[in-house]
Image (cartoon, rainbow, N blue to C red; front, side, top):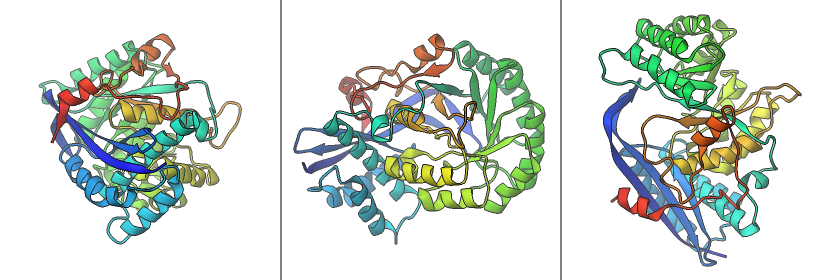
Length: 387
């Protein structure tokens, strides 16, 4: 079997109102999918991290840099391909967009491997560690409204009404507003709901500690990306100052080499690799091995379409409890509840995450079809595809 083509597919649609986080507002939703085609008729689907205009830069890397390296290769030589491609990219991009592009290709190759063997991805990764995973509803993004705390209160209540037993909000508007927003979310969600706050590296360590004290008082579960990803010592300072509030991070790190710094420097309580950015399924496995050696729990970061949700359903089911035990920490599935057409409509057969959450007490199960177990809804793809 040989690879015959690698194709990028960029989808976009306008939002009814802009959404924001600590770094920017955006008015479009974007998804960068790709397909790896073979002469055996098998086609693997992947997704590349990097929204907005970054998707177009990543498409150039996929088609102009990676595609010539892949044509004619055996798609089942996944580890060899990853190593050779990374080694060639090493002088030009050990992090960032080249690794994001490689991640999407790697995901598609694992999809092909699953189809070729008749096995679902979770089985290729060692089997199911659990029959279902807890999903948490990601929402409460910034909006240009007069009463943002009130909007966050309503949205938190709505996420709980959907059946989610855990939820994540955005912060990064300064200490006073962040704590007003966090209090509104706590009140809207009610007791017994696990809450997380994501600053998207908006703060210095001192600022993050002050905000973290307030989050801890409100009973939040974790504080995500409190400081910039390059500031490993800052992460350590924040973590040491906030016992009882877990510090999470890793979405802006790349490959095992970047994650090694977060883990060995004891920066985080929870590691959050983004499989569509950090190196794909192949590199995710190496990161997991490294994390397990240090007893660091892993909860995958997810920001993308239903293709990426499907990948992470498999990863979350295959992830072992770390460090392990009868009543141990278990990973969760991050599920974006904010407006996007690239959920529920993108696939030929819906993953039905929201339906499962509502029916099963906030939990979701993975299917057993080969590979990722998904196919694209091509009528939908063609409608929202952009050049």
